[in-house]
Amino acid sequence: MKPQDITTGKPSSLWIFGYGSLVWKPDFKYRRSQVGYIQGYKRRFWHGDNFHRGNDELPGRVVTLIEDDDESTWGVAFEVTGSQVEESLKYLTVREGVRGGYVTKMVEFFPEGENQPSVQALVYIATADNKLYLGPASSEMIGIQIAVCRGKSGHNLEYLFRLAEFMRSSCPHVEDHHLYSIEAAALTVVSYVLAAQ
Ligand SMILES: N[C@@H](CCC(=O)N[C@@H](CS)C(=O)NCC(=O)O)C(=O)O
Image (cartoon, rainbow, N blue to C red):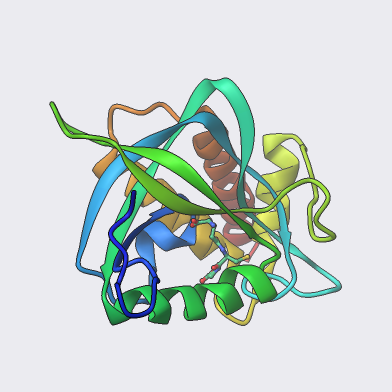
């Protein structure tokens, strides 16, 4: 049972699992963070984004989680405590929910390293019934789409490259073929554009 504030009944601490922009841009105050993974999901660039990294005419591509019992997804969990709980949830409700179309779920988070106990963590997932959901496409097509999209938070390429940078630096043992094949496709587009200039 999660510790609750006896006056408000609200949780006095909460873990929030990030696997996309949250791993490099949480933008909320937290007590501590921990690299680790969740089981039963794979990360895919199958969600559309018409605000942060795209617009209505050219929606960008961002990540969501797809259920798959044989897969796991690495990212970062952030522990928020006290007033940070309400502040982070209020912020993420807008960033992830209102603007991103994500819904919340509780999952089991496994910190990296020996003998670290798992914890329950809140995660934001965009499901296939979401109006922004784009679904599967080839790495080449996703790379091209990312290479030409930008939104209010910046270029879609930044979103892709920073996630790839996080995985290489913090999870070098993880071979995320989906992520790195899209990165390679986007870099090919960028190299063609630069060569044509
Ligand atoms: N929920 C995932 C994905 C989050 C995500 O990438 N959400 C987008 C909303 S569509 C976002 O916050 N983008 C901010 C940005 O791109 O700077 C996570 O835990 O990291």
